[in-house]
Image 1: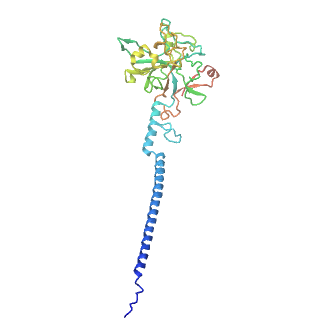
Image 2: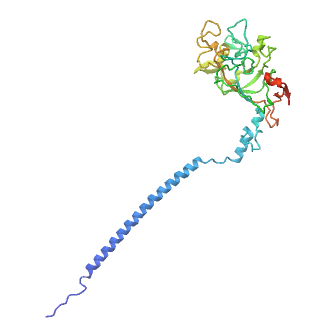
Image 3: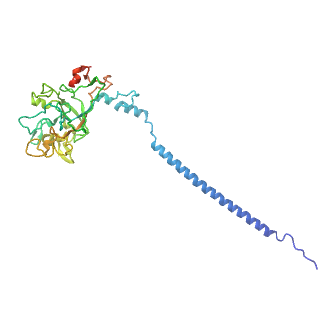
Length: 352
């Protein structure tokens, strides 16, 4: 009988199968590791990109882009610039047209605890009328205005006094130096043609051209210590504007719409005065004008009460910018070189 010897390679396939299984496991683990690395890399990259994008967007929002040269040049030419190094500084068209010697003023008022002894304009024939305040120059006729011209006092009037209220400060007069300042209008029409804009009140933010300006010495020969002519003194230091420039015959006062000329004729000080800290016309609880009605609209702005005149801005002299007049002077200035001038607050006029 022939003996059949077992083949020594008969178990090799099983061994190879085990080897192939280990390789597959290594490949799977390698792929999982690769995917893990990819996922971690993606998360880190996306996070960095998100932070970078946020920082870039924030920087882009905060950056100040340079203005196009032509736009900046045209704007500087039209409205001027605050940059003293610019060639357009002080030479813009608007500065040239409206002037550069403007300043802030008050509507004239006399408040409690005043120190001045200057006379307040009065209508001796009818003391219920406040001729010192604002008024339409002609009364209504059949409910219709005969004129749109409206006068109001400025703090140029001799009798203007802020009293003891520290909250009311004197307006700042534009000045070139200690020796020269703008002239308070001692002469009629010294301010005629300039533009004013009220900063508060029903007439706020509307430009009005001054139709007439009256010198402060009208009706007095001694700087307001006495009155020579009560009607002229009532106009002294006053500006006249045209209410028609408001562009509307309805006006809002304390949230209520009212007819402009009806108010201007019957309670004109509503357009130019605030009722003051006591929140009442004139002095609260007092019949200031003596018409037997307490705290009525006719008492608004009454001299000696806490009512305050509205602030307004007076533009410079027309065609008096540095482009036309390099010195920037209006031609009428105050000279404080004379000692007597500094004592009285008045001075000689210098023609430039």
